[in-house]
View 1: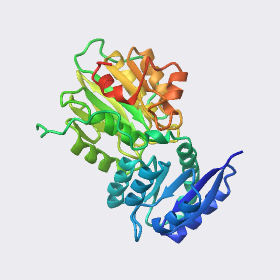
View 2 (view 1 turned 180 degrees about the horizontal axis):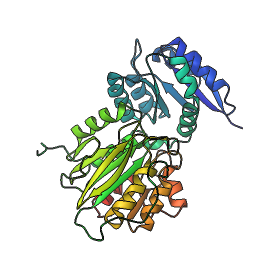
View 3 (view 1 turned 120 degrees about the horizontal axis):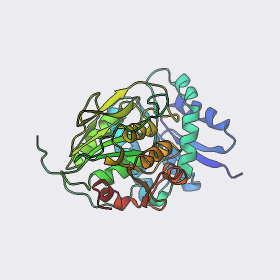
View 4 (view 1 turned 30 degrees about the vertical axis):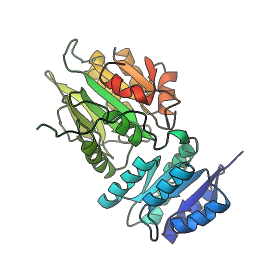
Length: 356
């Protein structure tokens, strides 16, 4: 069995030691080397090249963003960002994701060793997904961006049930689920939307603290308003609500209006927020008035929820393999029979608008 060769780049000796201990116990992963900063990493890369790089973003001599951009321009390689759960760290990490990194693994400022040991499964899964990433799509923009203008002012969470959607309404709801590679995909889709767009609800697998910064960054790039969802937020045209990291988000309805509920709860498909939870609620309360979209990501979260939307009469769309960074979630949705159409990333903004 060919092993996934990994290079670790982190200025903390403790982090390097713990990561190496975790990965050395994984039969299909081999730590090719470890470096305390990008300058040392460049020396190692001159001799041999890894399949995946695990990279810190705040380091001496050369920061992780500069190093990442150098890698992506010279030899695109799947990169996982290992970042602290801080506001400053979140902003820097989002720059890295925009530059082509595929995933985030978080590390706290205290209790590092125990945290990383507890998160071993997440790290290993992220490395396996990164190793299968379609590198030609990393950092690639396939949708024209509209320049921003001044803005005017699943069962553990939600049981399946009969549709409570209104038979007819003028309001369309668009629900989007994505994971690995999704930050770039969402940026491509949302920046291509005009200000007058359907209300959008989004689950992007992302840790706590990162979703607020991600939403704020997108809001500065898009014509529509984008923000992290709050409990009881109304879903409105021209507004995209992103589920907060560490919380589930569900659609609900009060009279003729749609709202979101942001709730605690157990991990669903190993995720919180879960795409399945959101899509099940959209199937239940919006039905045929909704469009469900699943884009790039590892695993199968969202596949069952999309099938429920399909069965409720909603329009359902999966991203194609050629434009996905990781063709996991879309593939599983297609396999389950939940996708009416399969479209490339460059057509997704048209699907949001009901024109594809």
